[in-house]
Length: 316
Image 1 (cartoon, helix red, strand yellow):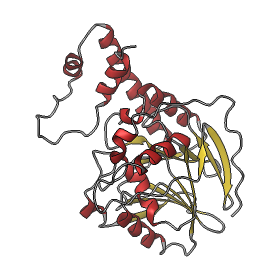
Image 2 (image 1 turned 90 degrees about the horizontal axis):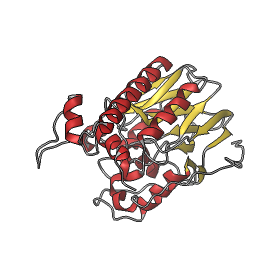
Image 3 (image 1 turned 180 degrees about the vertical axis):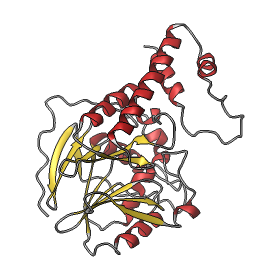
């Protein structure tokens, strides 16, 4: 495998606080992944897997059993995967389906962020492979590794072996990759994976169809403003195909439409905050449903409105 060394990544490195990671480490790994609303329960997660070729047919999207969209890229001497399944069992299903396509071994895994439904399957990939992530993603995974397991079946994945700060590139198995981190968005450690020759982008959960507006992990220092900056950078890439963390493959027009919608909603919230409206008043103004009753099954994470309100009214 030919791989360019990861060099100096940026003249200025941005450091983001990760103090909250240990407190929420059990969200990152475990039977129900840290990403949320649309993750399937374990029994359903192991049921099936679909591997769909993109153009060119050396790049695939795997979905179904994994609980998230995973990338599969066939290199000269091995397979490069982008993200893995929600559990060891789900990743085994994906690997079984992959064996019907190629006999090449998995040599490299790239993870777009630290949520469990994207990293838990690392545990069943070949030992000693290269694992690439953004540097804050690795810190979040380290925090989760030191936390108690959520249950007897929870298996903690291996840690990344190479990290990216802001921007880098590598040729792996004859395939050119570019890696980009702009700012904290879905989490503090998001990594955009870009294949320039194929004009394909893997966005991770920066783009995900399991919520009308972005899910921002405040406990992992995500940011709505950083999300907008990041998606502006995604749109600027010379690409035609965008693989989200959850949902159908997107076009550039799809990404642009989502970006415009999120910008407009954030501007609405900002204007209402400037008028002195409370969070409840803003939710009512925007026609959002009331919070679930105690004991009811509601969203696991703050809504986009709650995130933006918290950012704009933060003291200090």
